[in-house]
Length: 155
Image 1 (cartoon, rainbow, N blue to C red):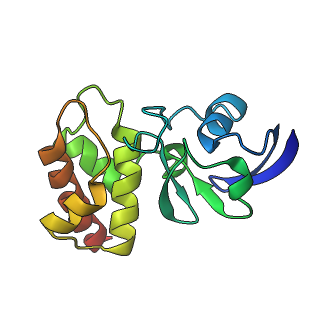
Image 2: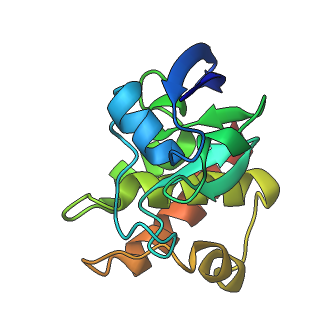
């Protein structure tokens, strides 16, 4: 076991865990941040996507020892009241069906729009590739990302 000081959603947290513990389990089991979901455990489905230093990262394969001083943002840290443009667009377009993958989808979409505020369809598909939606809401996801891009332009 080792102690790690982590900057999660703008707050300092200390955990005492094995250095190889995936961030997903640190977030869920030790910090009780349950918005980040377990899907496949091999970084292929995207349900566990968080931001590490602003970059979309799969938490299921990220050992806590690799985080260092980088800021970690989870779905809970996007906005206090759920009013991030991507979250608002998700609701307006009625993206979720079962909702299980949505935190990972949203975190990937936010990272995309941060780096590319006006993506093409192909750029959206490329950035979201690897985020699996069991319900197949891909067309609504793309529509919501485009809407969020428009919303960000007016902010």
